[in-house]
Length: 197
Length: 372
Image (tube, rainbow over all chains, first blue to last red; front, side):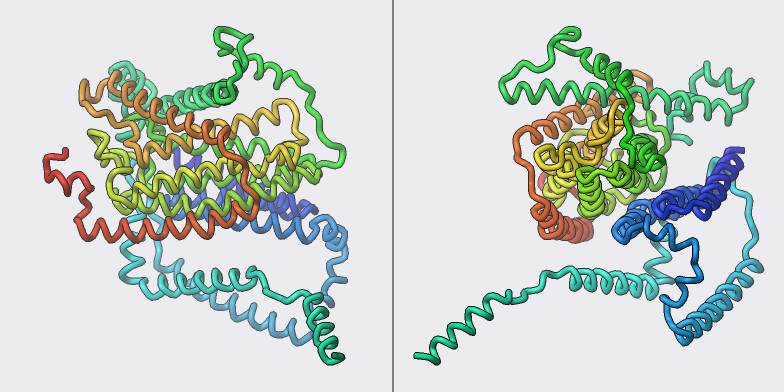
């Protein structure tokens, strides 16, 4: 019964927040509703007995991604965008020419095809199982074991990806040691003076 | 459900009688619900006493008297403050973002109170002994950062915005040394649930994780400094720096909404101190073992945790009134150039220690098996 209550409240939260997120014209509010969606999805993971994935969902999205999005929207001026969304079609030319749209459409089709293929496969194999209310086994030990045995390559590759992102961020944020213009001027004058003498 | 409040109280004859009429599930839920409410009230009171402790201790450090009018020794000041907060006018700036302005304080207090679900107050007085307890606590407390940022943004004031941005960046940055230091303890204990972590520190103080190996000893201080920054306490109180930003992210808030921000901060200090105690200072463990499993023993364990937490709380306030505030660039360089590398070094060192000495602590190595 408790699982049912959790499922219905979590899905109600997801659906309501999703609808509000689409409905609202203020991008800042949209981000906050997205927060509700992500927390609701964490609740849905919990009904499946995936406690670690639920906690990770909150950790990654609430603690990182949503704050990042809020920053991005705030710094790029969420309120100015509000009026432009009225005429979304006018925005299209500014996003690229016909070649970029063609490439984008092609990649989207391939991606959608891949996803459909994988999900068709999933629905055939996995049967939904009843979860015992009081005794579902902890997932974190199994996850840890699988990550360092069967899925070691994927695990290492994703860590390399994250390292790349970190190094890239450090390079972008690195203070540049540019010589101020006035130093050049001073040296130039100095040189000039020496030539004179 | 075995090691939680509901499971513990279901063993009592009274609750077994209730369970026969209402069913076990509903009774367990009712017990859980009652204690969740009780813990919330207790923590709100602790937060209230936090404000008076802050004023009294700061007065003591500056050779003043502090609040002494309401009640004996000024102890009922928090009631007077509470009434004042509730009865003050609720002002909102005209150009503020109404929805976010109302939401922000609730996000803060929600994020703090959600961590209480996994706090181990004693062996059985724990609302829910999740398998991912520590991880959950870190994850859900990051809602506070969202609340602070939204509070700063929605007020539509320059001071608030600067404070909110500082708060969000500070909380995100200092999560990294905190998480790495917690990982170190998790490596030693071999589990993420709070009961696993505290159980392994049973007995005398030398079994506490702070004395487990040299790396955990350093780790405790890294953790303490990082939690000061996570809770926006001085010397890291840049989001509400009075001398530069008026009052930071809650400049425009009045009345009970300001009160919720302040309460969230003081409760968070208590919760974070309790987490430090549970991870490093033995948590609820007692050096002696009497009346095991009975209610008095649980209360003694609760007292043990409470005393240690209050001692740490005192240190937090002491630090605030002793050190000057950092600059923003100093804050970031302390996090990224000092604390994070030290935390990574500690994590690697602890992992090597656990493998090399088979998970034994320093005292077990020095004094053999007689250490226990």
